[in-house]
Image (cartoon, rainbow, N blue to C red; front, side, top):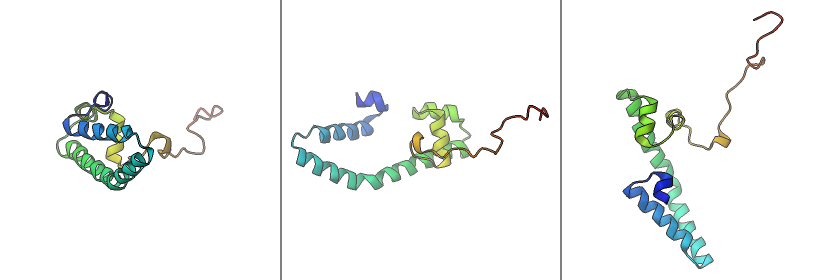
Amino acid sequence: MAEEQAGGGGEAQRVFDALQALKAIEDELARAREISVFLRAYGPAIKELSDLRRDYVLDQRQQQGVSVRKLAAKLNVSPSTIQDIERGYSGSGKTRPRKANDDEGGKRDDHTGA
């Protein structure tokens, strides 16, 4: 099921399986301790993995000329995810900075037609 949700292959599937094993620990204290060990060790690794993926995306886009859509299909992600990776953005959509709007809000002045 994790493979279907994440589109993971061999190595990624092993990580998903390990996460499932952590969640399945019956003793609450032991589970909490093991999760703490995981989070302490893998927090920094997530940044490193994101950087490796970004390096690949930038190389494919800049050096190889691969389109956003083709690269998104290759990586099994949406085109907007590729664009976010290129921009160095890695947060959730809820925390994404909004575009700055001009004072007019982009609306036409109906009295002048401008």
